[in-house]
Image (tube, rainbow, N blue to C red; front, side, top):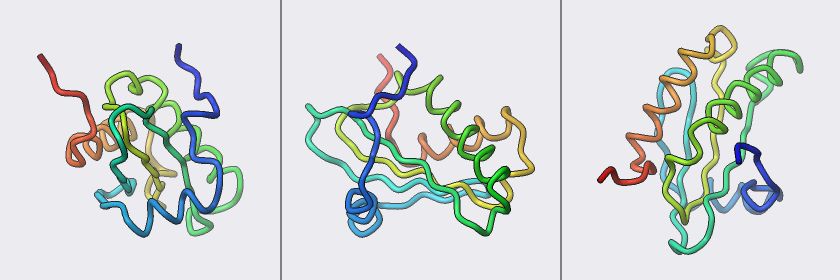
Length: 118
């Protein structure tokens, strides 16, 4: 239920480039979110990126794990039919889980990718 299967991930560089080129971005202090709407019937796919400015591989992997965990626990709240790319910024390496969760959920709300509440 809470796993990130291959059909829900962006896998190829070409897919990332399309989202970067045609998607809209939302930014805050810890992360950047690119959103590209697709047809509503398709599942939402996501990719996680950390650049070399964050630090060594250990720090980049920790940042990616933080982003993936926030997504894993909140993926059921996201609407279907979009491609997302979540990019960690250098201040993410100093953040704990609660800060990362608050920041990423704020990005999701500002990008309007959360499901409508009834």
